[in-house]
Length: 170
Image 1 (tube, one colour):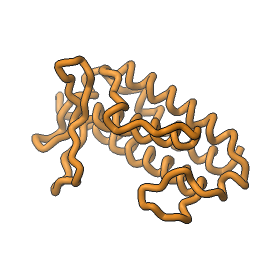
Image 2 (tube, rainbow, N blue to C red):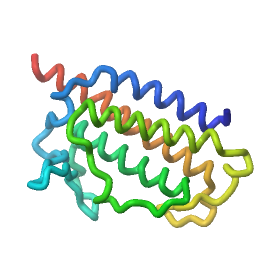
Image 3 (spheres, rainbow, N blue to C red):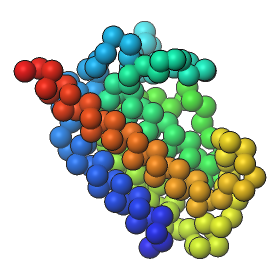
């Protein structure tokens, strides 16, 4: 197992700690008035709040928004890594409730783990199939490290929001 896969496993285990403890009410709890969440449209599809240019100040996200965000970037990264045409942001939708969101994320984690397990050291040194910063030196290893860092950040945010909601109820 490559170091990247080990780091991913460690980060996931820390995230799983929070996933196992989430309550259905945690997902759409708004921690502040200035907040981003997911909203169910008239067609039943859950849509995240979004802005093409990040607002200042940045809205506080709900756990629902964060879990959708994780699902979106992981879905698109897996698409790239598997050689598929990546889905548009609006094509990746939140499942609509906490339990389904957790299962969705666990499925994406399994798909990402399968990608990592297939990578050789030579593959990791290769050019990534995408790069948001358009850096031609963006290697597969850097892409995998970014995925890990993004998961760490979002897991930390969820890990902070969960006890805040619990504390606010008392």
